[in-house]
Image 1 (cartoon, rainbow, N blue to C red):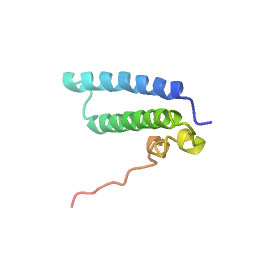
Image 2: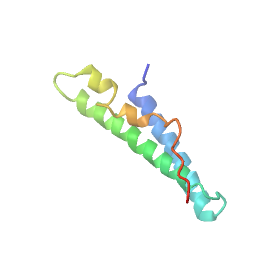
Image 3: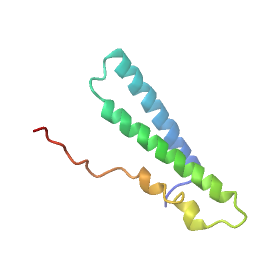
Length: 91
């Protein structure tokens, strides 16, 4: 089961709290170099918001395509965590 809109909105609220805490820690200088983690959280939040928005748009149509609604017209694939990022080595 993919999840309901309320579950995704709860995930967004949780991400908002984590982002706010991490931003405060970075500004205070206690977080070290977690900028990449912050960027990942921002990207995940944008993807979840896009998913919920696409679901709302599809649900407002007179005839709902359940496949488009279910995966947010493809936005669900943006929410998946990447397995591993390719590493760049400095020459």
